[in-house]
Length: 625
Image 1 (cartoon, rainbow, N blue to C red):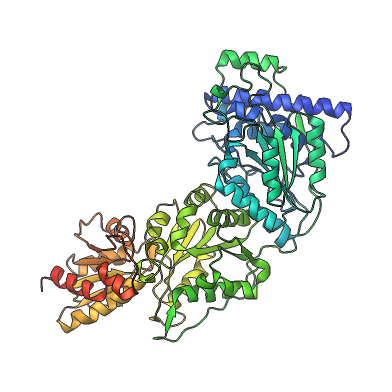
Image 2 (cartoon, one colour):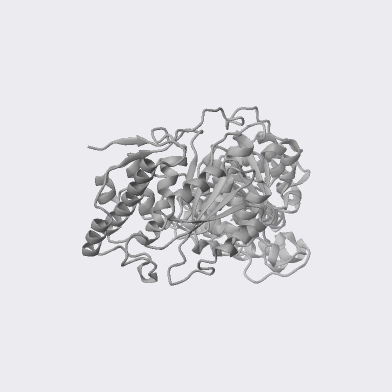
């Protein structure tokens, strides 16, 4: 028989202290049992934080375990996701999973208790395990809760000391201090040992404290195995006007003399005989059920809804408008929806996110030059039900690729905009040119990749993106190009536009963005030579319009030319080749194949062999003229 005990946040009494000791022992026992049963896992990393988590879940985590979707719940994020045996043992202690599930499901194929936590579990907000991500994401959740929802809930993040070497952690610590996120507490499990030996600072607790304080955090150093000290540290955090770091000096493998403070046990499950002995030394298997205080009642001040009338911006056909400007216009239009928020990496005057900031300053967050934190904050904001847009130069998203990759693992819905793409940007040179971004974004599981060629299509695609699931990316150009389409024209994701063509075309020119305009100019040159060109706007790179691509190949006898302002690997050309894979069409692929340099756009497009003249010359060759 098991008993569920609901603990309240009062001064620790002897009876409560004994209950906490028992809970901590149970978490240790179950962490050992689960990892041994699975034959893998990180029990030693779980044991060091067991006391910290026992006190948190029993006395300070305000959470309705029967209603994990409640917007009033505190959030608990395991930034050190490899300590999943501890997290899942907490779920057992809360009574939301069974002992049988813990023992027979952990790290087993087809079970939701995966090696590192994912939101397949309703009590998990985001996927962790790639170190340096939990705290940055928590900053986004905290921003939503404090600045938008205006609720008294708290963010608790269990961090490992090894991941404190990640630059992304310090981006998060910086931004949390800047926004004075009083609802955020980082619990750093300083157990001194990483995967291959001692961490950078080992047990230099004063160094950790000074570093956090330098970023305007309240920092407190405690013995991470002293239940009274842990409880007192947690009790104080809700009354502090800035983020708090609880720096807990712990022992890796605590509770098992054979494992304690031994580097060789990292990431290793105990063999069955040693596990059996360890469980006995810890007092045996328990089935204590513990739940802490319930959330405080309240109503989100900025409840995320899709309400509000969105009116698309309009443009005059033939006028020259940069798609980055149209993106900003569309964001302003989307601002009528209270669930839309925007993040910038200090380039908002170039990406035009500042247009949104001027009209909706309360839903705009400046992350400065911290692209990892920007994407992480977007993931955190969507945890609270918001639709976050994050924008920077396309080239700089490469810094945040791991966060984008993990966003897909989290099944997060985020919206990314990369401007200043390709050699088209001109004099700044290759350091600023997005030439890998399509490849990077296409490789993300379930992603959507869009590349509009004019202002009308850009605005239409932005307003469609906001209701799509997964990682969504739109690519915009720096330069201004003629508006091609009529206002109100439809641009379905997965579609394309035949901008030029007939029933008897000699060659198909496929482009997107700047290269579509070059294809149109080339088509004019070809027409003068008596060559009919079908021009296809592949604004939807992923999913690509397979039928339109195949029809273009069929109609032109397989004379297909793809032109892109991107490196050849993984971009538009390879998307087209994938669409034609069953037809074995010999596609001619024009792309940026050498390292660009500074110059004006026309010079650089010519040097890359993707300007109108180069396209026309290639088409003449392909057409045999």
